[in-house]
Figure (cartoon, rainbow, N blue to C red):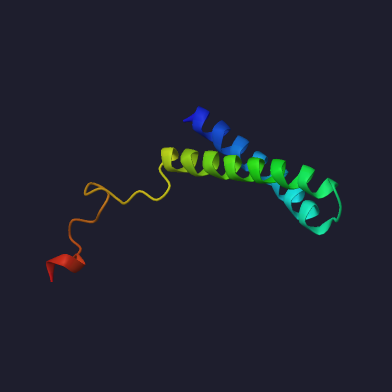
Length: 79
């Protein structure tokens, strides 16, 4: 679990490093723009992918199992 947290934070950091490169690359004019856009996209895409994969591995978005549900409650499919 600790490795997944470190991976999640690393992905967020890479994503945060990529956003300013993208923003400044698209705003600036001239030859320097492409030198900032490509690394910005690489950092942003890889960072977001790593963060999402780590979040899924940590259990974000999982449904509750039957042991976590209240057995006395009426479920919508049992009406």
